[in-house]
Amino acid sequence: MPKRRDLANFLRSYGEDDLADRSLMTTDEELDRIAILGAHYAFSDVAMEHGGSMGGARALSLAALDVLEGRDRDLHRTRSQGELNAGMPEELDAQELERVRMVRLTAPE
Image 1 (spheres, one colour):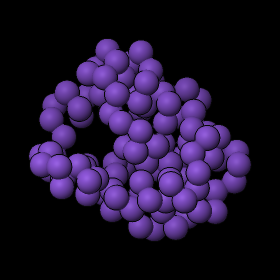
Image 2: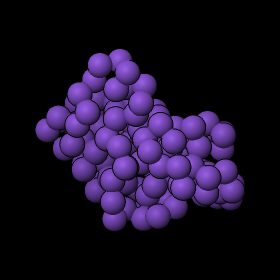
Image 3: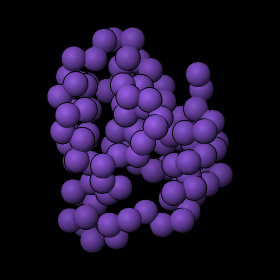
């Protein structure tokens, strides 16, 4: 299970400051659900079929967004500050977008 402080830091790296603050007050049940979804997003067969793991920070950030707000939007930033500093493109490519879409659509209830 992720630590609340780590989750908040991941969320901030994607520009989700308000959600990061909220994540510090998640219940144990919400945190368990975030961990389950994050594992699905990063390591499920669906993720692997669509290009492999998206990485733990993005997976947990998306999971936190989905648990705490619902699946109605994407993260404010598609890349974390660390990814941008490492020279990754600002936007996700088509394969990455498809992986995100598919893992969210097939998430366990």
